[in-house]
Amino acid sequence: MSALNIILFEPEIPPNTGNIIRLCANTGANLHLIRPLGFRLDAKALRRAGLDYAELADVRLHNSFEECLSALAAPRWFAFTTRASERYDRVIYHPGDALVFGPETRGLPAAVLSACPAERRVRIPMLPGSRSLNLSNAVAVALFEAWRQQRFSRSQP
Image 1 (cartoon, rainbow, N blue to C red):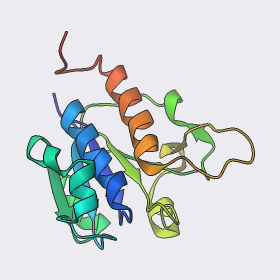
Image 2 (spheres, helix red, strand yellow):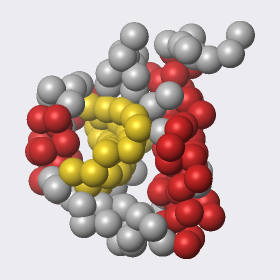
Image 3 (cartoon, rainbow, N blue to C red):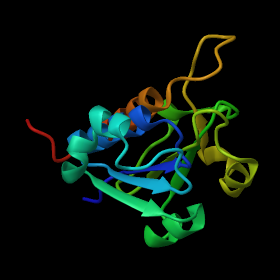
């Protein structure tokens, strides 16, 4: 069964990426980081937050979003954005799907969002007036829903 893929488009905050590395190591998801990154991968904050899990996670760097999708053989992908109308939990996820998240301070750019079919632009519900969730929290919410739908494949009984 193909693992789920998490794609972080130009992540900016080291502890968030470190937490997501740890999340991927514990769920079997692959992590793809799109350059430029807002930090060095050997940064102390990233290491403290999860780089010690990097050996247990499949983490790949890509120079562009297009390069990443090509390396994944053009998977079905979902853009997570506060500007979507479709809820993330109403989607049926498949093995090998990619969940795409934008940088912490600005979200996914218009070019990426417009490349994603409207039905695959999804949001995580929040209370009115809320701006957004922390990136690592949003990835955890989304990844666990997709993994739950796959009956937590490859996990301990």
